[in-house]
Image (cartoon, one colour):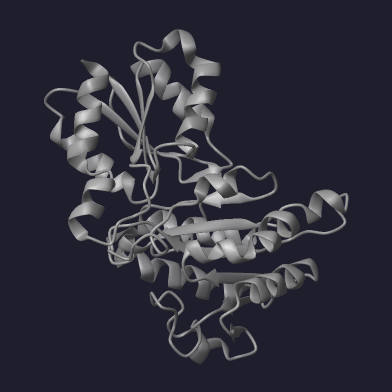
Amino acid sequence: MRNVTYVRALNEAIAEEMERDDDVFLIGEDIADCGGVFGVTAGMLRRFGRRRVWQTPISEAAFTGLAVGAAMAGLRPVCEIMYVDFATTCMDQILNQAAKLRYMSGGQLTVPLVIRTQQGGGTCEAAQHSQNFEAIFAHVPGLKVAMPATPHDAKGLLKAAIRDDNPVIFLEHKLLYETKGEIPREEYVIPLGEADIKREGDQLTLVATSRMVLHALEAADRVAGEVSVEVIDPRTIVPFDLDTVAASVEKTGRLLIVQEAWQSGGFGSEIIRRIVDRCFDSLKAPPRVHGSEDVPMPFSPSLEARVLPNPDSIASAIREIVA
């Protein structure tokens, strides 16, 4: 095993897949000479050249549309949208084209496209650079959605996403890039749709995504003397591993969803819908979603910290459910 950063794990995944398959290429803003604003594509230009590392003008609609067309033509683009907030300028290309073309062509076309983008708060970048849009993408049939929380999962899931013949929205949290974790020295791929039990417990099931997985584990540690918490990271929300979560809820009888997205209308509510349909008789308490306050993200550090879930607020939610 090797101890590497999240950003290094992503970089390795991209490089390995580009070495493995000449049809894989990169496209996006500042990804070539600068190596990406967060450093994920550092060294790719020197290693693979401009034929496979396309640095584009600032037009998400244009280069995302180009990537969709390239995927339809048989290439495997890895497209970077610098912030998920900017994906709002190319929703037609993502939601109306990439997501639907395989279905509308009766399977004659595939769209093996990965859209890497960064989301989340905690960096004091205010309302237009701190949002979490996973529920929007998960709502549209035809898209897969990955949200890795650790370097190990980031590398394995990105390799699987690049090999998939369907469009995958790959959501990275800006505050995870410098976190470290162990990854195998040998090649590995993590299939999309397999959850991971990050911590075992028997009194409450806590399902968390992206950076919230780290907060959830810290909160579980804090209440360890009071409540035995099982922490599950779905890793992908489309496809969603309902079997693993349902088995846990049937054991614990309690469910808490922690998401950084806004409290209202997030994917956590969908998880609860599925669990209630399947495990209603096993529930000992009403399931609950713990997310961000329903306000645009403040610029002020103190206000931003108050809006976002944190280990203390998660621990309080745990205690309230088991009370």
